[in-house]
Length: 151
Image 1 (cartoon, one colour):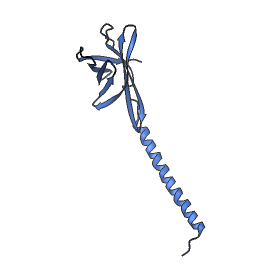
Image 2 (tube, rainbow, N blue to C red):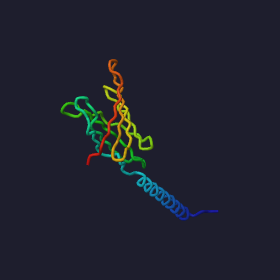
Image 3 (cartoon, rainbow, N blue to C red):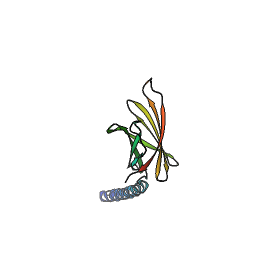
Image 4 (cartoon, rainbow, N blue to C red):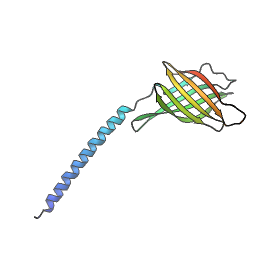
């Protein structure tokens, strides 16, 4: 049995087109799914502690940002404290969703490791902060504040 070259080429062309069509449909369906899963989090934005105390170096502002990665909205947090005339920033850290409106982050700096736990309370965020200082002379501290979203 002899197969002609033109038949082989036609078969390969047909098979290649079928594979490409299936691959394109699969990718298109996946892209739709990814887009539908990512959405802005209500936590995104700036949150202010209106009762912060400059003398105690209270946490006065939270900045929460989000971006879409592999169909999931990932959040980051930056915390600012009162430091005289300027704001001290702790850097950015991942904000993990623990479920039931609870979010957590560990922010490490040269001075301390800070565990941040946030809970959504309608229009407010309740923030619990645990400070583990990198010093033998300072004991761990914990404080809580409420934050309201700024426009």
